[in-house]
Length: 220
Image 1: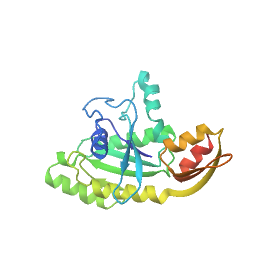
Image 2: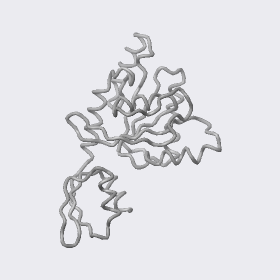
Image 3: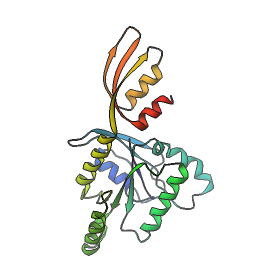
Image 4: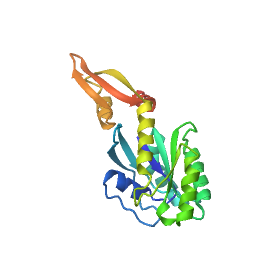
């Protein structure tokens, strides 16, 4: 799973809509996305991934919204790749990025989790500022300067997503009994089943998954 995170109004839903063809609300308002929205994305010359859009982060979250906010971010904890979408045109972009990093740490996201940073809204910068942002982004292989609105920079970003996700996957054959319906259903929900053969005692299921998904399966 690939989770989109970022400060509110960073452009996550606009990016999600462009990549998936979905019609997620994309508005300049607090918590326009209150529930995680997940869609499958078929990467060109790469694997199919599940993309999750999440609620926008803010600093000094009101107490009455803390529980709902945390509940919507549960998908992030199970993501194999976190994509941090930043509004690079915003005057407080650096401070917002620090807030996002702090919240991810508070949620328990480990520091070695694969991450990509997207500097979004190049289309709102003047030409010189946009060129400077592109140059700075090129110095870090995990940073991409993009415009979710125009599509600029997205092919290179998606290519990197494919490499990360494909490199993290391995194939395994699982033997499940007929009584393990919950586990079998979970495997199909994760869209990682390559083949299934029914046996006398249950099913032999071939999966292509990440180490994180394997750990989640063991915890079921």
